[in-house]
Length: 392
Image 1 (cartoon, rainbow, N blue to C red):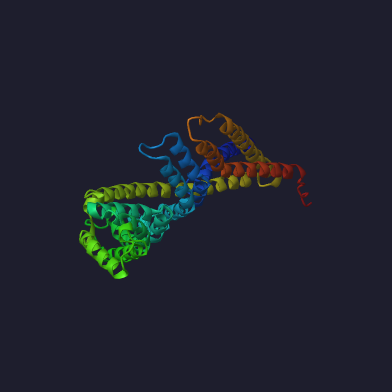
Image 2 (image 1 turned 45 degrees about the horizontal axis):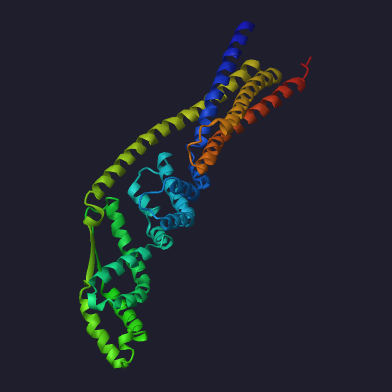
């Protein structure tokens, strides 16, 4: 009977040690890969602006002048907190689906509500100074329409173009919604008509003010009425060249965009649906593993039916697992800091990746340290505990 009891205790202790090893890995995964807060925290820790700067300076894109490189780096630096916040929001919504908190997933809607929402796009336009590009484009288009004998109007346009900025921002905010819907495959057609009449009115007013304030040298002696008539005579033919509307349609982004985007999102949703199923099995197995460990501990308690033997057996198991796991993690962290082949990576990634691995190991490190300490406490209890003497 004593041999059978010892055999049963040996089996239970071995299974407990083995189960703790599996549980440690599962606990680490549950605390890192399956934890959206962990993913977002690691994303926030990545210095994206420095990474972009290192990549651009090491391998600058072709036909990318230095001033544009500087502008890109500065823009990324300004937008980085906003981008990370929107990406973190998207990650949280996706994890709600993966972890079973929501029953359905619409990636197009998630993207539109986070990284492609109107407010965020507006901030991108503002920080990236997209209006400057539009102003330059408008200037080039208008300059082409000025006849050779009216080229003096160009310098007045230079003064008038900046007045278009509020109008440009307003039009961008109007266009963003339909363009995003088309790009995400929500709409199969795209047609946004922008009226250029307000732009023409702003240009006329601003150009006229600049012209009357500083007329060409040959008109320096002309009266205000003569300047007005001269401006009207020369500006009107130029204004007629500007169309009344500007249309944005499928040809701007490409007619294949909605179909390809919709297919890509559908494929991603199918992959996430499979991941959700796998995660559900994992989490069920995780709970069952915890129950199994508790049953093993209960089995050891029931076989001993006394404190000293129970605490000694559990203490040895916990201490052995905790010490082995904790020492292994410490050794692994040492080699992670010194032995990872990161020389070919940008400096930002060289500092980020080792810390990512270390942060991923931290839950397992805390678990093993806790079990190590718990094992020591149980062993101490097994030595200092004095059973009550049996009643006569």
